[in-house]
Length: 96
Image (cartoon, rainbow, N blue to C red; front, side):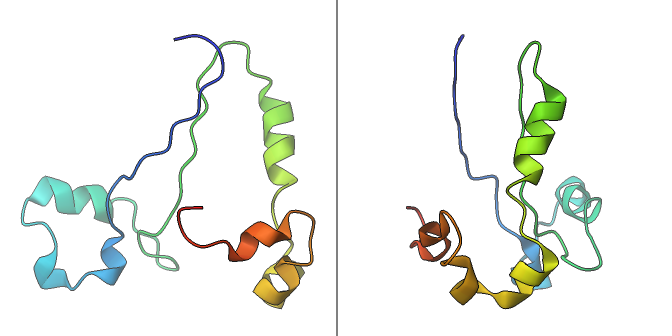
């Protein structure tokens, strides 16, 4: 396929929120999660992948970094986020 494409898919649950007796029994599945476990956020993370030829990596990084909230904004919380440009999406219902 050529041209622009966007794909979103569910990749499983965050095991942080599942009681350990309900975790997968298979060692390889447990290791897949534990291998990426972080002491601060456990296995909770988001991933984004870009695949393409001649991607302008610096421009892409710059654009994505421009979307990040400052520590001050993060601490201010959702009431502040909705006041920011595009902030109406901060409180959008899941799946919207």
